[in-house]
Image (cartoon, rainbow, N blue to C red; front, top):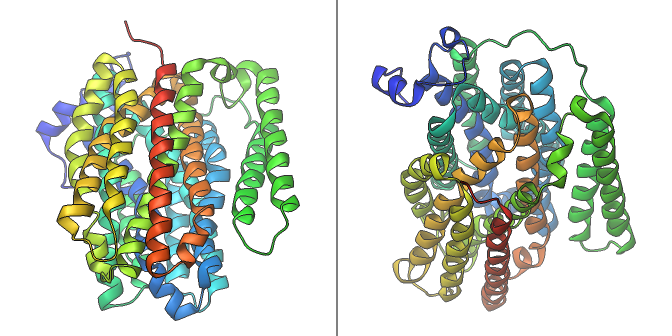
Length: 472
């Protein structure tokens, strides 16, 4: 994004209408740019690795299980620590936490690029996940602090569009880097992004105010992190061969108990809790949680399998497979700001019901994809329709989540919703190990089965949107 532009500042930067001191909001457009640049680290890294799986397998001899751990080593800490990352920002300052998370992510990216074996790469990916868990919820909470009303919806729409664009452009650029330089370059490109985000945050994001004096909810943070971590680990280990069902089932059961304990503890703390207890008893929040989990789980399957099938099954190069995903960023980038502003005016319910259903229809169109099928006649229509549906859902979903809590807890709410989205993606990743190990016609058949399941998940996600209250 370019430098400060007065017209942009006036358009999206007549920021809060709630009496906030606007004298400290010098650069709302650059604040938005900072949040986009910081969060793009997480979005890019979550997608660019997908086109590098084949190259990683050839270079490091990873195998199907190793490839899953390259993905899950990042998703495990990201899922487990997102709620804690949002709560830390609520307590010590969102700007400080954002800078810390971006810096940690940049350092871990260097370690990924220099990794000489699979174990080192997975450890570095775990550290990347920790940094992403700090930066992601706080980038969104900073937007919530800076904008309000329809302007908040528009800003969140731009943020969502940029995130979707970077997530989908990542495979294209990453595929080119892999073909011409090697897989290590896909991690090292994070360094200029991280440096730019830290500089912009230091110069242009509003300084953190004094702490409200309330300590961090340590017990709640430990329960949430342990519960999410145990459940995530159970999902990962359950997908691996050679494990009895008892281990993963025990982890899932322990995770569920810890999360129930977290909810009970938060209810006990009342207003001092890092998550408002009332959220857990509303149909709207339950609907948003279900919708997020199912929709992002289904999308996660497609973002991994589509380029993998095109490379392994249809003979695409890494660059061509990345380019095949371009309809997603192009359509979402155009549609999300508009639909985000619409959600800020009229509410998110209608868009959150219709969007997932359109995504489901797009997935079903991908059933025509096979080893010898053409891109424009088979892959493109499905991806284009999927992108239209996601444009309807992404920004309204984020706007609805932020509207469901007061500003003081926006970081925790953003962290919780992001954790749910990552948990959905993680579950999807854990269930596709057999597809990554398949070849030839078996790979195409397994891909078609995954497409149908993902479409059904999106239909159920649309039903979750019915739980939202109608806006007067």
